[in-house]
Image (cartoon, rainbow, N blue to C red; front, side):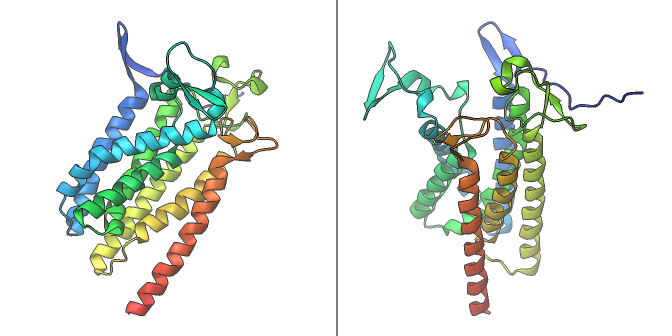
Length: 292
């Protein structure tokens, strides 16, 4: 008897549709992530002796800067999608003409987590300077919520039939409709659910970070920046390997799925962040030994 197993096929990107208006799973999951993350970060702030209202005050600028950063990052590495003449508004940039409506249409897809991290960190940095709050302390109470939000948000990729990997026959394979497949794999039906891999990996990181946070709180031996440093190392490690399976990677000098002759941007950034995280960890330990 042949046992047929696969990951459930996506039911579609919409939760509810009324006329021209619809509620998308991706947006819904991101909203849930923000609400859950806000609650967690406020609790962590209280444990660390930081006024929880700072988290609430930071949230609006953090969301806006993260979205802008995620979009700018994506557009920068995908300029070919956003150049050419448009009948509405055009912005001349060197030899390019950027189609402004497409550039702003975040709801049509095209954001990158590394860009969101850059935008979010800048927002936190300037917020901390204005409030005269230690940057690493605030970062440490925001990061666990961030990685949990990543774990939840990845399921938006599932509903959108995106962020999947190469063809596979593994039991947890997922069926991808032909319209969503890369041309190179039009005849393949089942693919790696890489969104699932990253979601699980991010959730495990969240558990690790909360464990470290609680351990520091119990022992009263707090190393500001340790949680953020751990996140950078662990997330970058997992993202590097998972990115190697994906068919929709941002590339430099070539097109997906294999970036032949080019470079997978997320893997390069992951190597840089992983290395930076190790260096940061070394200096944290060095500083700790000097103080004790």
